[in-house]
Image 1 (cartoon, one colour):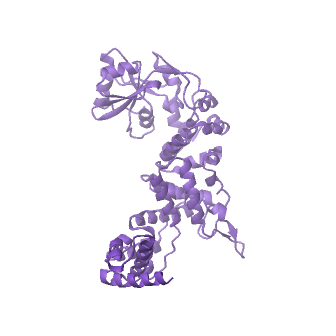
Image 2: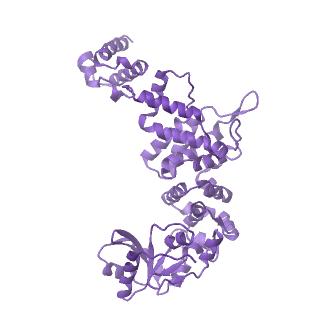
Image 3: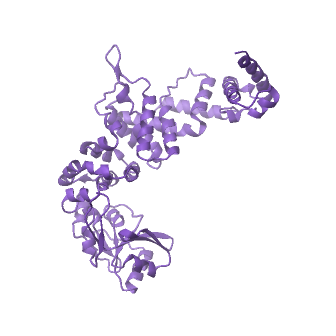
Length: 452
């Protein structure tokens, strides 16, 4: 058994309970990660003290889930979640117990948890480890196993279905056979779980080293079809050329190739080709084609992310990246064409777009590929960015107010139209981005529009 180095702060925290006549055990993810060889980060505790007792003992306590026996204690710069030993009542809504009762027994508390690997406790004063459901053994075997009857566990709280999938990716574990069969038979329990809770589990999956592990389990169990049907429809859509996989596996591996520290960018990697299932056609030679799939993918992604309750800004960012991911740079591009590309995608989005394309290429073969063309394009963009160029209306050496004062234009949509045309002119010839030249061009444009 691996030796658990007890941080003095944790021991001090536990000792306060002891001095007040209560027991306190370290539980949950910290122990699971420790025995799995992963450095613990968050620390949760279980105690026979009631939430009111905890509030009395400590100065700074947040009643985060007090009706379920949970509070958060602020202690020496840490946020410790503390839950009173409890026994759960029936779960009529497959989300939360209808009622709870507090128990003096840590063993009763461990019995109510979802998986054996999450049902381990440690007495921080003595170092004694309690493992009544053989969670350490399952950690050694790299197995996720529900406690008791897995159908009952998944019926109690449908989110446990997503948690099981998530742990496969975070820990690189397999799901025990009976637990997996229950995963399939209980998948509809997810319909009772809020979109926000499902989204949060997806975010955690996307933050793992290889999300494809969990995504494959979600597909095989039927969960993927239930929560993101647009993605599951990509199974069996064959691609040609450099692609070794069908569209769904390509998307799974593209997700693996994306950055785990940027959820929205990695989600974009996962969903960027979802439109291929709807745009599939075949050319005269019988090869599959997916014309304008990026537009269809963008529409689907907006719908998917709305359903999962992502924020408007997050949806806008993912949609913009996916809509613009199909650029095909060649050395024949003029400097004006490069400037238009920069203007269209936005300077702040270029790095993300290149990361998405790199992940897209990774997903073709499930391996890193060196793209000399992307490197050349990146270097050319950087070279043009060093020059004094205008890439947006805000960069023009003229404003809407200038157009009103110097060109006699009235405030209205025509000003916006002319500013857009001036930007197009400057993208072709950056030397024209000076106030005098732009006023002359704007006057001519004003006359043209007044005639029309």
